[in-house]
Amino acid sequence: MSLDPRTPVLIGAGQVNQRTEDAGVEPVDLIAAAAREAADPRVLAALDSIRIVNLLSWRYRDPGLLVAQRIGATKAATQYSGIGGNTPQSMLNQACLDIQQGRADTVLLAGGETWRTRMRLRARGIRPNWIKQDESVPVPPGAGADVPMSGPADERIGLDRPSFVYPLFEQALRIAGGESVEDHRRRIGELWAQFSAVAAANPHAWVRDGLTAEQITTPGPDNRMISWPYPKLMNSNNMVDQSAAVVLCSVQSAEQLQIPRDTWVFPYAGTDSHDTYSFADRHELHRSPAIRIAGQRVLELAGVGLDDLRYVDLYSCFPSAVQVAARELGLPAGDPDRPLTVTGGLTFAGGPWNNYVMHSIATMAERLRDDPGALGLVTANGGYLTKHSLGIYGTTPPQQGFRWEDVQDTVDREPTRTALVEWEGVGTVESWTTPYDRDGNPEKAFLTARTPDGARVLAVIADADEAAATVTHDIAGAPVTVHADGRATLGSAT
Image (cartoon, helix red, strand yellow):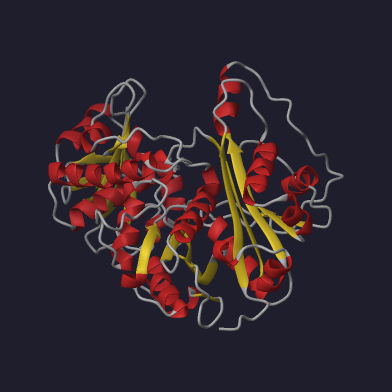
C-alpha cells in the first residue's frame, strides 16, 4: 500500500542505565546518552522538536535546550511536560498528531532521572554541582500542565502519597473478588513474580534477579512492609538512574534519512482521558471507567481486537494498577503466553518517576521489530489511577493512518460519588491500608468507609495498637466510628 508521506513512524529508541558508585552524570547528560542510543548524529541533527518529560532529580527551566546542545540538534524547538506517569504516551500521541498535520516533522521524546545518584549524594550532605539555568532562559511550552493528586477529603487526614492510595485499591479488589487475605496474597505475589521474570530477561531492567512470589510477598530486612498489604517489592522503584528516548518522524523524512524500512514501528492509535481527579470521588475504588472506555476506543481506532495484541505493557507502579487496568480492558492476568509487561514493570525494570512509559514504548518497539507483523498495547497512568493514555503499535502500516481521540466526554457520563469532607457517625469499612514505620511496626491505618446512606468518608486510625489489628483481622464491612476531625475507631462505640 502507498503511504501518506505525513504518516508518523517511530524510527529509533534508546535506553541507558547509570550504575556507577561515583557521582555520575546529571539528568540532561543521561538523556543525551539515551538520545544517541536512539538515533545516529544525522537524525539528531535533523530534529525540529525536542520534548522532555518532567523530571524530579534536578530543577531545569528548559532541559530540552541543554539536551539539544549536547546532541547537535541546533534547529530544534523545545517543550517540557507537566507531571504524571501518563505523559510519555500522551506526548507521543500529540507528536503523532503534530507530524500528521505538518506542525512538526522529526521529534525526540525523552526523559531521565538520576534519583539514585541524587539520594546517595544527599545522604553524604552533598548538593551536586549540576547546571542551573537562570531566569534568562525562557520556560518552554508544556510546563505546568500537572495532574492534580489530591482532594480535601484525603488531604485533611494526610493520605498524601501513592504508597498509601494504591493499597486501598488493592484491598478493594480483594473484597470485590471475595478473596481471603491469604489467597489474595498468593495471587498478587504470583503476578509480580511473572513481572520479575520478564525483567530478568530484559537487558534494560534495573533489577534482574528473577524473584519468586514468596520472596516478593514475605517481609524482611531487604523487603520491609511499606503499607499493608504491600512490602517494598510491590512498590515502584524510583532509586534508579535511567533514561529513555524515542524518535518519531514522518514517513517522508524516514525515507529521506534512509532509515531501513524493517526498523520502522507505526503508532496505530491513541486515546487520552482521566478518572475523577480525587480518587475519593470514584464510584468504586476497584474500577476505572476511563481505562475501560479509552481501551475500547483505542482498539476501535486501530481496527484491531484484544486477541490481535501479542504484546502488552500495562502501567505497573503497584499490583493494583495492573489488575484494575487488566480487568477493565478484558486482559487475563498471569497468562504465560502474554504477560502484562514487556519491561518487568516499575518495581523491577525501574520506576524513574514520570518517564517509565518511555522505557515501555522503547522496549515495545524492540519487541515488535523482532517480531514483524505483531501488535502491542502500551498504557500509561498519572496520579492515583487518574490520568490515562493508551497507544497501539505495529510494524505494518495502519490501514487508516494514525488516529487519536480524547474520550473524556464519554467518561464524564459515568457515575461518581463525592467523598464527604466532614462527617461523624458509624459507618462500615470499605477499604483500608496500614502504613508501617521503618522498624517494621504498624503506625496507623487509613480507611475508606461507607455511611448508612452509601456515601464515602475517609478516616484514619491514629492509635498504633488498633492499627495493628487491621493487619491481623479482615475488617472489610466492619463497623467503624468516624469523628468529625477524621479520626476513626473500630466498632460502634462513641
